Amino acid sequence: MFKFIKSNPKFTQLISINLCAKIGDRLFYTPLLTLAATLSKAKLAVMLVAISETLPILLNFFLGSRADQKRHKLVAVSYNAGFRGILYLIIASLLHFQPSLTLIISIANLNLISDLLGNYSSALTTPFTKLLITPDEMQQAQGIVSLTTQLVHVAATFIGAVLLTFFFNQTIAYLNAALFLLTAILYRLMAQHLIAIEKQLPQQKNTHITQLIKINFSLLANNRSVLNELCQLALINGFFGAITPIFVLFLKEDQPTLFFSQPLTIALLSGLVTSSMLLG
View (cartoon, helix red, strand yellow):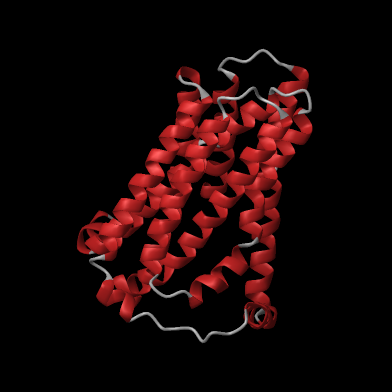
């Protein structure tokens, strides 16, 4: 793996910047869940936070289709990261107000937009991996991307929980905003080195998005083996993805004696679920 990383510097740089953005995706998840659990209407608040994290994943098929037709992909990714930084600056400002259901709704909506932009950015950068490496390295590259992404999700969740032990929610939101703004700068610098690569990307026809989605689903339906595997993975991810919000509500209702703080306990469960899925 280290030999592959060393021999593909541009691929490694692009994936490293992507991982920085992935840290931003998960860094504020535990603080937001913990904040939602403190409200009198905790069940509704936690559900809204869970929806804001889940809905972007369900819309990936739409975002991927849009990304295929987008030109100047890396410039768009840079703008997306910068806008996500602005969104978290707004979230940090909102967190100075008294916690309420209205506040959680506002933050959940902003978080939803941020995650949608993040998934769209991932779809924009995916085509570059096919041109930055040789075809026989594709399987190894996909394995590295999948492994590092899952590990970063676990690490970012833990970091968010640890930061919450020492800092206020708004401080973590400001740190997240700074991370996204830094990522925007790195993407812009990286774009200057990949102009020639971007010109080699195949340009998709300007097909209407609904027609394009229909074509993609038709191709998927005709490939029964892939469809069967994807359905199984979707059910597994959906089941385990719902465990963390339910666990947060359990801590709220039963208030068991914890060896660690509540945010760190939530992060431990989330990390355990992700690690188990990774091993599976």
